[in-house]
Length: 347
Image 1: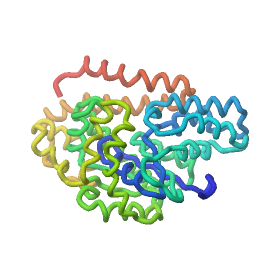
Image 2: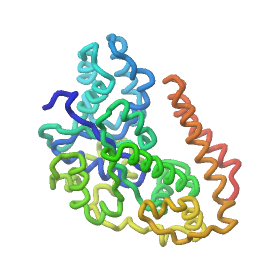
Image 3: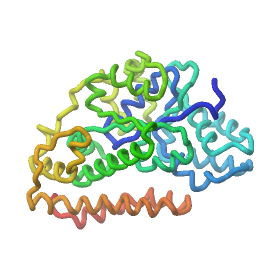
Image 4: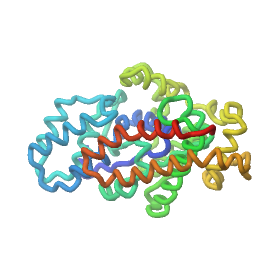
């Protein structure tokens, strides 16, 4: 295996329910890539540990415990005691970037692995942190996967990931897409755009394009990740998680494309098309309604303002110390939802 400094890292980003986990499973089955379950500890812990240049044992141990306590880390298949020993054995001059890579490399995949040529990290929320991640990993690459904003809303509505209000969800879709466009303009060689619909229709062709972008060989076994269906579902330690991701282990096909046409009401489609605006066409999707009624606009504004407030508050909270930031991010979203639902009229 290459030295840890020489193993590059890539990030799969995009809105939840757009195909990010599908890409994760394809890469997990690739013999030359290690990619664990999503866990935003790289960004979450950077404010606390990112500027350390000489690590003391107590700081390494604190880092280890903070990683263990990060939301979603419980889903990782990992020898925790072995990782603890490896972290404590690090050279005092280890960089924060390489320390995080060590955690990722400790992931134990269900799929056979050869020489690890790339470390992967799938985190939808990292879409708005490309600049920060580039600061940590200057050579990092990003795969932004997108999906029709109306299908994205329909999928979000069927799970309990976030507030299932069409104007809120579609504004978030637009916000993420704009962030990805900005990243592509700033780092043109480091960002790859992919639409879920294209990946579902031509998985071999599109996944090979992604592999070419990273500079690794395309491997057919990556498209056969369903062979580990039962083992993979068992790694998801809650019935909720297994329910949300069970469809991932069926053959990749186009059955979930265009469901919005029959599942959304005309009112929902009008709101979605208005909120997406011209970004719909920029992303490759055609609006059914290009002109918005006055009623549609009024129905949309509360959700738009709510979503904007979330991102303004997020940018403010990001400068807080680690413990304060963690507390607010854990408690804040639920409080905002309660306030919004009380103030919200009919959408």
